[in-house]
Length: 530
Image 1 (tube, rainbow, N blue to C red):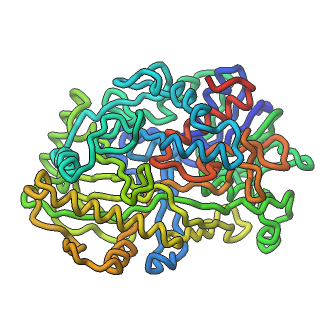
Image 2 (cartoon, rainbow, N blue to C red):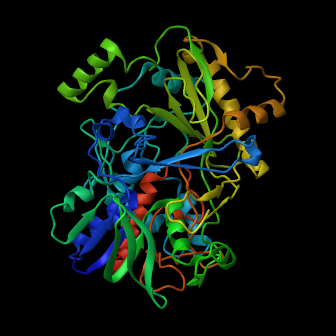
Image 3 (spheres, helix red, strand yellow):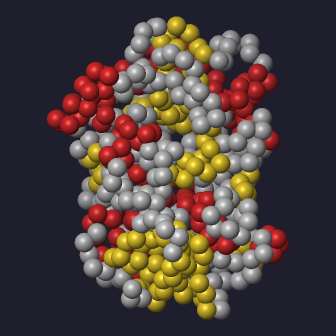
């Protein structure tokens, strides 16, 4: 094929946004995606996203045995299809807190403060209900209110208010604190992924060349300048692609540092151990791993009112017909309909987020409790624990070696325990207590020792699927990219995904990742954010 201007590696949340903006500006782009196209109905029907997990459209990354959570391995599913995480997530639209971005700016990332990124968020957004100074209505990314509200989701919101948490009808508004129903990246009852929005707008443009099912194995160099990429097709054919301008890594917080290290950019000692010829020593590649961890608190319902069994028999047929005739009903739900944010330890801003599922949920390594119920999942928003990923070998097809070090900082455990305690108080409030026969797994006693809470958290802790930070942005010795997202010391290479976050945002990472893709386009095209 002809040499293009830009190669974008990864058609995920950031990659699709970046690609669309470059093509719209008249640049030729080759977009490479390791997974298949987003042509399965379970991707586009909101309530069926969990059916995609564990298929060929997700990477099933996993950690090593985590020493601070009973030696358990934690699985971290990530998108492996057009749209990436935005095609397999629960569609929750959260930007984080203004203080998150002020911290980025103050830690050496000039141009990334709240007033710098807010215009980009507004430019991205096509909000069906909200407007004004904090929201956009003309952007490519559709954001809407839920079309379906499960009775248990409504009961959680009412119970949380009874427990003293205020109502909030806009978690991306003037304040994040409160409980309510999440807005989601959906339109007319269908998922609005970055592939269905940004990428769709340029799919027929001759400046775009999209190749799915191709696995990038390393970057190609002329000295310290990146000139292209090497990849393998699904059939194993070796492929090489060249570009005139830049390569941009948008492969996510696990794959982006992996590709850098396979290409000879990373900690020198580790590269030598792997038998990889170093191109440039960058000690921060793969370090600073962060993720959101949650611990489910369960309540069993007296009546069979949860989601259990709704996907079988006549009930499934009824839900399917209602969705097909009007894109409404249970299948139009993102499942995690309600939740909220709370300051559990008096730090002055929310430190815990709740994701509420109107069913009893488990994880890859454990089954859920049996029967009908509700899962209230408190998540520590700003973990202090840091992990690291390395290569397992020089073979690009081998999994990475990931030590997340979840809960290695004792402060993270204190926040998790505070979140669990608040979840218990909410389950005791009348709006939920009247529906429940009792708690499950965790004794509901006011005199429960702190150690029992800690033991419980370790036994049920699971990821919220938000890996970040492994190619951090900044100017210190651990920084991998500069504030314009160029890789330090390398020409023609940038990184634009959640891996560049110096610290994880206080909330779901999809909207911030799309914003990062938009910002990368701004830097390349040398245009202001507004």
